[in-house]
Amino acid sequence: MLFENIRVKKINTIIHYRATMKKWTAKNRADHILGIILDGSTFHDFGYKQFVLSRNCIYFFNQRDNYEAIMQESGLSFSIHFTTYEDVDTESFCIPISNPNEIVTLLNKTKQAKEENNELKLLSYIYALCDEFKKIYNKTYYPKDDRILKAKEYIDNNYKNEDCLENAVKTTNLTPRRFGELFKLNYNQTPNRYIVKRKIQQAKELLSIQSLTITQVAQMCGFSDVYYFSKVFKQETGLTPSKYKVKK
Image (cartoon, rainbow, N blue to C red):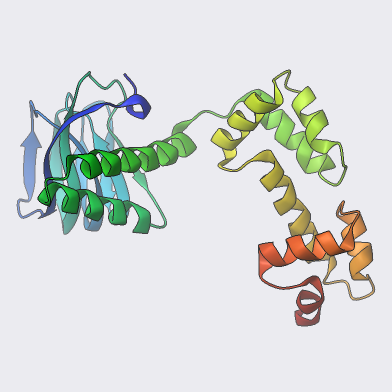
């Protein structure tokens, strides 16, 4: 069973823990561990891989994996120790993230639900947490699909055209739905969202050219309606095209 299909059997411990030992070995553990490092850093050697857990790194330690740890800087971790109904095939992993707020919030909610003995909330929060880990893991490790890479290249060259997305899908021989799923998995956004962002980025560059009118910029970026262009531009940047142009 892969991590993304994990079925939690029991949550045994949810803890904040500050390491005090300089070096330790973990063998024959009964639990999987899911967590985040809040500060400090520790080197972990799993034999088949090594990584350093440091601030804002999320991690999953597979129960089957033994490891040796060497503390580099005393650190604080926030983790959940749990068992599953089936063995998990996904290897232990460590991934640095830029914004830990969502992960920490879910960990706190999971901890509170356990303290309240609220099993329904407890399972709900840990599965939400696993889902966040899955998204980050897939974004980091999922191999780019050649079909999607070529389609993205087509979009980059033709995003101004009205039939851009339709033709991009045709290059892959995938259904529009499957194409959308794979594109989002590879680039963490829908194809439509990606096209809009490309158009707005181009618009921002063109708006710096004072001789171009807003209507001209809209048309050059593939917007047939200047009012719709203004609406989308403000949604993306927080400014209307006219105010953005004045700032430039």
